[in-house]
Amino acid sequence: ALTDSTLILILQQSGAHLTYLDLRKCPNITEESISLLSTHCPNIKDLYLSECANLTAFSSKNRVGIKTWAELLFLKTLH
Image (cartoon, rainbow, N blue to C red):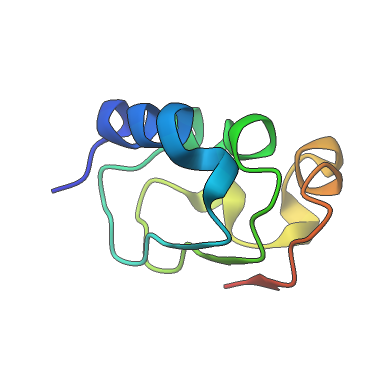
């Protein structure tokens, strides 16, 4: 199963090239790794986080820190 430490490594190494990220049903992902999206994935367009048990604060655009999502300029889909 994907963990925060593995996802952080992926984001640091390849995040600049990602435009699509599907993390649905990843129970070990937390806000720690997701908060790095704005730093490492500036080109992300489609982001899927549904059914991630540890991401309750990230369940919608309106419930997340505005700065984090505002920095994802190309984000079109957040599910």
